[in-house]
Length: 148
Image 1 (cartoon, rainbow, N blue to C red):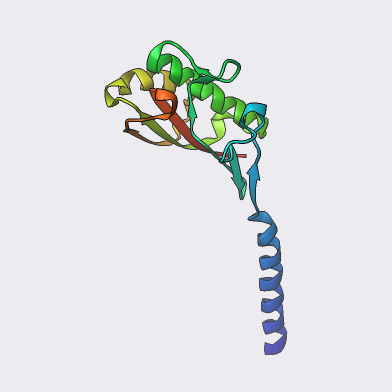
Image 2: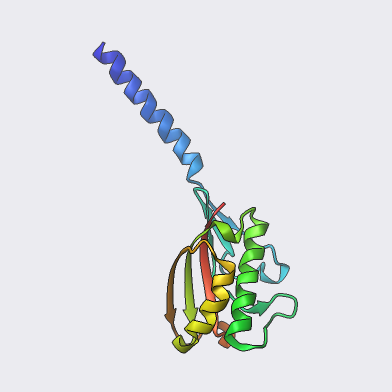
């Protein structure tokens, strides 16, 4: 009887291990934008049902320039860029579970937050800090983790 129980436990462990390996596959997705195909990073890395997005700035992807209008306009564009990437990978803003926000100037926090709240009523976990030297002299960069 003990041998049967031991064999059953071993079988369950092996079966579970085999199943979990396929679930935990890491997928480095190429960008869906032609202009970013040669970038040295992935727009999205997928792992275990989660999408880890690279940071997005307020770049108009048609003109490849920052939108005009300061932190408010850049915040809107950054989130619209995130929304487009999520939709491309069959997810959406309402499935965002974590945001990391980098502001060039912490004094822009209130302006940024006013825009941010209109896109994320579910209130995902968030970290916000200021740093100088964002890409293309942007005022804001946002990265997210979302469920698929």
